[in-house]
Image (cartoon, rainbow, N blue to C red; front, side, top):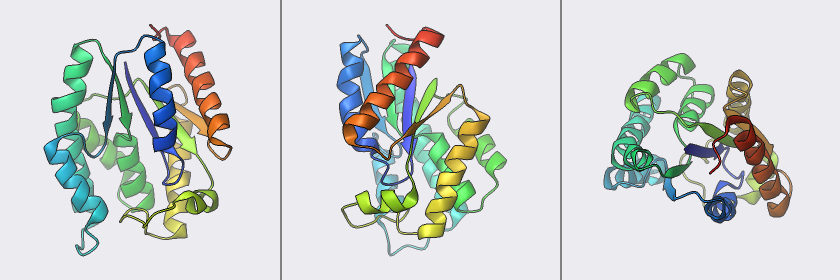
Length: 207
C-alpha cells in the first residue's frame, strides 16, 4: 500500500505522521517512511536548493522540474522497491503538493503538471492521500521557525494553495481524504485514524 500525507505549511504533517506511523505498525504494516523531496542523496540535495537557497532566483518551471526530478529518484530508489517487497510506503508529500504549489499557487498549468508528474513517477500514484486542511491564518501561527522558500511567499499564495488542495480533493474524493486539522493534535490524529479506518474497511487494504 502507498499512502501520502499532504497539506499546506503549518498543517501539522510532521507531528501527525509521528503519531500515525506507530498506529499503522500496530495494525501489521511494515512501514517505509519517506519525504518528498528527499529520502535519497539526490532528493536531499534538491531539497536544500528548492527550500533553503534563499539567495537563488528559481523560475517556477525550473522549480517544478527540480521537484519532479527528486520525486522520480524517490520512486525508483525507495518507493517502488518497497512496494515490490509488499511493504507499506508512507510519504510526507508527493505529486499533489507539486501540482498545488506550482500550479494553483505559482500559476503554472495544472493539467500540464499532472502530465509531467505522471511521467516523472512512471504512473505510480498513492492509493490514498490524507490531506490536512487548516485555514492559512491558523497555519501561520503554528510555524514556529524561520520560513523556507515555499512558506515565505505571502498570505495570498497560501490562500491559493489551500484552495488548490481542496479543489483537487473535490475532483478525487475517493483518493484524497480531507481532514480538518484546525483542532488539537489529539483531535486531528483521531480524525486521521477514523478516516483511514473507514478507507481500509471500504477498500480492503488493511492487513
